[in-house]
Length: 281
Image (cartoon, rainbow, N blue to C red):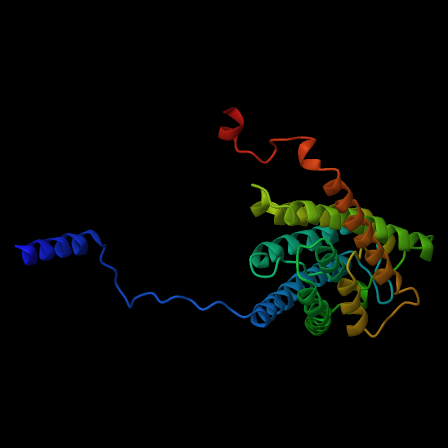
């Protein structure tokens, strides 16, 4: 009797379990920290390359269609400025959306610095990503130079006539600060809308490019300026502003981020991240 009862229980238990095709699923061994950093670096390399290669290509096409000539990579056409801004904004949107689950989709040394300062990524990962992003920019610039007829120097970031080095520095600083702060709030602060953060990030770069492309080239990213400069072997004497300006902008954005966190911005307008159902309860 006991044996039959045990067999019945076994039969019932086996009947309740769904039948699965394939070998039993084993427990995945977690990656060690170094391996995760390498995977993130690989994603950042490919993502930065994809973002900048498509951006450089779009800029070269726009300037070529506008009738630019060698040594003159600037145009007075608002349509050309719009196309260039769209090229960078949409390229960043697509690249971030493709890679943000892997590495965060940073693609910019000063964004990486801001995320490290604000505790969004570990400092060790930031140190690995810095050279990765710079290397990817040089590869993107080199390939764009090899594939497209216009000279890659057309994609250089240069100052417009009448824009002094000091003005250019502060334009880069404040545009970068707005851009980086938008990224910190959209992607760094987790909310129910984080999954569409790439759209906001792409639009933020688009807006900054509209404002800055004509006056400074709209760098906001040392890697973006480095790629065509290395590929074209053309460094303007004020190239340093495209490093210092974005760096100062990232520091300013990080400081303001810490300020709003210290002031508990979540309590100023509560319920913004609640679902409709929870807000109605």
